Length: 168
Figure 1 (cartoon, one colour):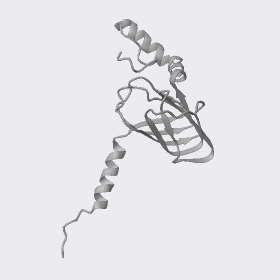
Figure 2 (tube, helix red, strand yellow; figure 1 turned 135 degrees about the vertical axis):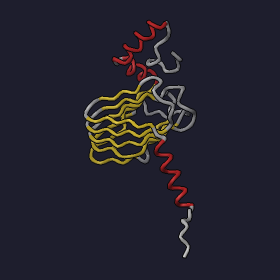
Figure 3 (cartoon, one colour; figure 1 turned 90 degrees about the horizontal axis):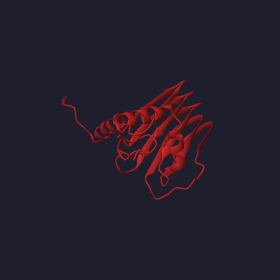
Figure 4 (cartoon, one colour; figure 1 turned 120 degrees about the vertical axis):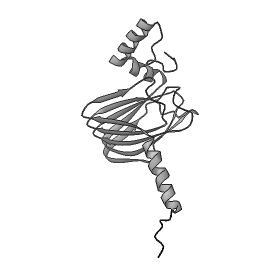
């Protein structure tokens, strides 16, 4: 009887999928507010879990490598705000809704820029997409921007939260 384990292509694919899941940037917001602004990550894959909370993700940073951005959400009675460049393409075709849920993209104009693919499930929640100048204003009116501006003044640099294209 042969007792040596054999590896099949399915096992390799499962290992690769498990590895892909672990390299995602995870954002958890439970009963509070989480804001990730400026140069907070260099990942292209995100997992967002929010329950009766709000989360703000700034995806305008040049530190994020080129290519598609993938966001897997699990939203329950929450709001997730995405700050994206003006020409970003938002793809939420694979998003599931339970109860009331929606993606608010007021301009609704997908450009030829970076593609942001949103998957997962929304239960009585929403995703708000702020583009270009509205994204800048959303970042400006936060206490994190005030702290960044004070730090930049002390160090003699430029604040990065308002416009992440600045290196600091």
